Length: 145
Image (tube, rainbow, N blue to C red):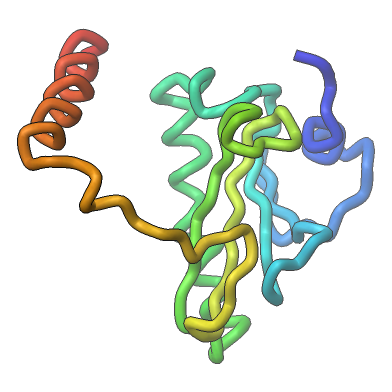
């Protein structure tokens, strides 16, 4: 994996508005600011996407989310919710190929950004099809464990 802009930010080579940092992860404000406080959480080591995570990598990154979101809640008392978003792979609109989690504060149901209001497809699957989909995933999880 090439050194991406997020890797360089995590290594301190490119400045960012850092909100949290330790030896393994960094959280900094996203330049796009979908809403006030929109933050990106990255591992400092080069990990392309969620598919490349080990269990330890996932624990390392995701265990920091509650600390950051609680801090946001205190910093922005008007915040009424938060979205966690991670695009993984080109078809999922990942634009920087260094794993990152968008932490997007929400201040009302009218906040959108990133197309988070989406149409559901519950009428497109029968109960049997849903059971088969679940079984397919469950089987793969059992094989991985």
